[in-house]
Every structure is written in structure tokens, then in C-alpha cells.
Length: 149
Image (cartoon, rainbow, N blue to C red; front, top):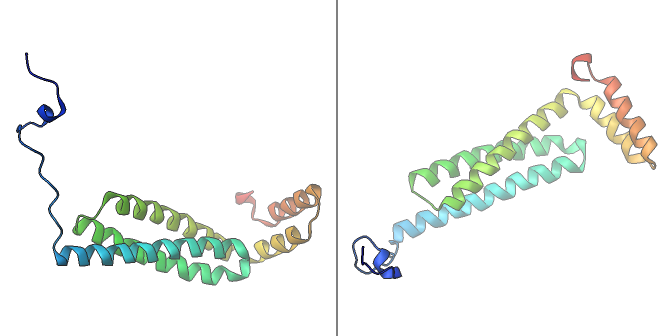
């Protein structure tokens, strides 16, 4: 009970803390490839999101980027777990895959109701007042099947 509470005494073995071992060339190469794939994955997911928000006529490009993002996300996730990469990459990959899942639902919904979405976008683009925008939303709701209203 009479022990010192200094920081160096908090180490269970009492010795100095081991320094981080430098990474081997193979580990550095693996980390670099995983990080490069992770960056490409993030750019693909962000690109899919921003292209989708531009115009419904670019939904096909957004669909291609969403599929590519899903494939890259799975590859990065497997590499992250297999090679024990940093947790930040793992967290970012899982978050990106959630965005890919949401984008997949949005793109599929857009393709299912393409005509209604195009009509709504054209209406909303020309609407100058809040009441005109509300009218566009009302017309969209009326054009959808009864179960989706």
C-alpha cells in the first residue's frame, strides 16, 4: 500500500515502455496499398453522392459509382481486417459502406420511379416560391402508388 503513484510505476512490468517497432518494407507496402484503396473508395462514394444530387439524368453514373464504391469498400474492409490496419481506416470503411447502402436504396428508388422524379425535378427547378415548391411536392405524392404516399 505504500507504493508510489508516479506514472512510471503504472506500467505492470515496471520496466520502460517498449518503443514501437519499425514496420518492415512489406508491411509499409501493404499499408500504402490499403490507404490508396481507401482514398479511392472515399472519392468514389462522395462522387456517387454528389452526382446523384446534381440531376436525375445522371442516375446511371451514380449507380455505376455506387457499385464501384461497394466493391472497393468490401476490398478495403477485407484488407483492413486481414492485415490489421489502423482502426481509423476500419471505421471510415464501415461508415462509407453505410453510405453505399443508402445510395443503393436511393438509386433503386430513382430508377423505379424515374418518370415521377424527372417531373418533380423539372417542377422544382422552375418553382420560385415556397407555395410553388409545396405544389411540386404535392404533385409528386399524388403521382406515386398508394402504398408509398
